[in-house]
Image (cartoon, helix red, strand yellow):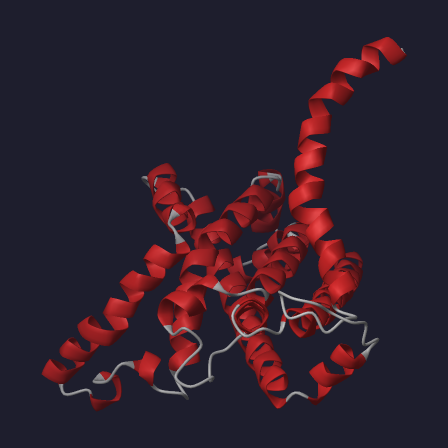
Length: 287
């Protein structure tokens, strides 16, 4: 048996070494440096929990957390509503359903930066020019240059691209439902709304849980969309936690401080994910 296991160990060992070298080891290293005053270069000394305490006293970090949570909550709700509606439409008996599934999935395979640059042009040039011709003063200026509206543009782009993946998961869930249940409900005189709430949604509840957890986690880690659209501006109005950690840690000489911020952020994301899973799974049982 040991001789048979050797080939399998040899196959997984390179992948394990690469994963440990480029993922696990940097995580351990970052956690270690979070207890020091390391700037990313030069000498360093241990400072204990000083970095962690300073994070909670940093108004810039608190603003970034508030923006990130606002963005993540709004985007998670919107992307699940939109993707569920699209999945229900694509799951219906309509023409070109397979072609439409491919079309709706295309945003997911596009580069985030390319999509961001395209939408940057749309928000900055295309929409304002159309709005001026139509006399719509509200959209006559670039919303990405407005500190109060820039986050809306980021939400639009992020939701548009993320809806593709969530739609695929909902379609997978809808495919598991026995069509005989709908035939029985029709005989009982149930309408489409009753079918959705009494049959469809309870049976795809596990897929709803997965989508909610994954969407919230991904939106909490938003980085590429902001870099491509606003760069964290105007000012710091759209600066997310990931962007703050990147700029402070790799550009601002705050490697140890932002490592502590990253550890806190990791704990926050894990905690939110666990709470979501437990709450939503409890709702699955109640349904």
